[in-house]
Image (cartoon, rainbow, N blue to C red; front, side, top):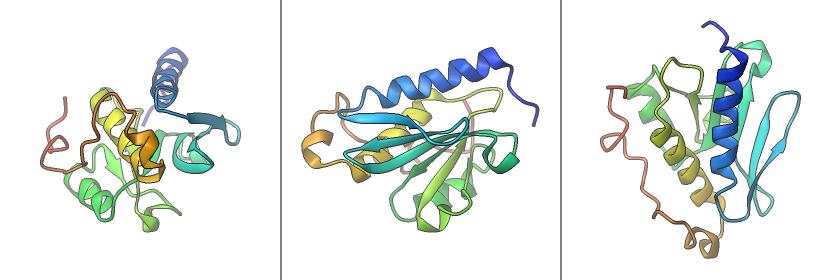
Length: 144
């Protein structure tokens, strides 16, 4: 995969970080050279990764409900993957360096991860109710 132009990379990174910052008490902190960790009250729910371990890819890794990561990676392997190290613990990877990115999917993945670790008092404050990441609802094989 060819590297994203810097302007596209920055726009995508900033869009992800901006969305994370809309979640109650969530924050994105620098974690390494070009990575960000997403936290709420000291609990990690995701990572924005750029060139993770030299893979030359831009991705989002987020916590998911049991079994969701393997299902999505199987039915939409062009967009989703099982990340090394954390995939065995139910985490999901989403490529952000594809020609087209479905930002509704990105927000859904981040929101779902946030809801899995945030206290209920915070998830109740979300503007849009959490929707489960059921593969048949939004994550079918076709891309937007």
